[in-house]
Image (cartoon, rainbow, N blue to C red):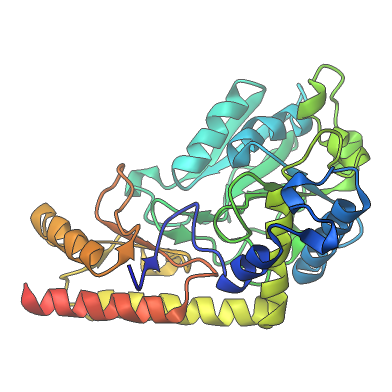
Length: 361
């Protein structure tokens, strides 16, 4: 197929420049005569990749020296358990804000490990909004407050993060990390699966305050589930996902080359506006799932007047080279995931397709 518009929710589109750079070096990295996939993770050649990737992430996100940057495996799903194992002692409560399926899963895992509480939830509106925590029932026993910064299935996103001082704010940023400027100092910990904005599937990035790692009560926690294990060994306690980290570095190089977070945020807002303006000007033919105040700039979710039209639209989109527009099975409809590497031209093409389909139906 000559032209493909990749709107997959994850694994998702990767920058062409990053893929071409990896292709160029694939068989002979740094004149070693080997692929980076074949290098020992203890070698000087790989260590240079490892350190450069950390430094690029630190620079782009303005991560202070008071935080550890860890490269793990297991996706955000493993963090759902690893977080409470490390930061939820017996005499404390893990507070969870429910804004979608992934926050529900995070809560479910934590409940198996320690005491939890639902601080706020928008489930009664089918997760179409982000809750206001102004009057949330915080307690002195809060171990942390957990949020999901962007909700891929429902298409909602935190526009402003809650200001919390009594406990660490922890965020699953799997689907919007690196998409806009954030103040890392607001958070005790950030974690993210790489497969949406950072790189290929298989790498999980954890950014965590060093003091939280040091204070963790992990005497009875398995070694591989301790943040300290990876902090103490620079994420090299065991064999890390070396190729994934390498490609993550290539994506970060691309992000820096185009202007960093400021440029990425600008372009992401432009892409989202193209699609939301199309929905809003369709006289109800397309209906967005998320309330306008909570709309995601990463995942645009919408429905058509009926299931038959939805199927026809998705069938036409597939014929025209659009990939990944099916909505999640739990809510149906359509979803355009417009992560960093999705070009603005793809959003323009989708806009044109949506307008054409409306005109013909």
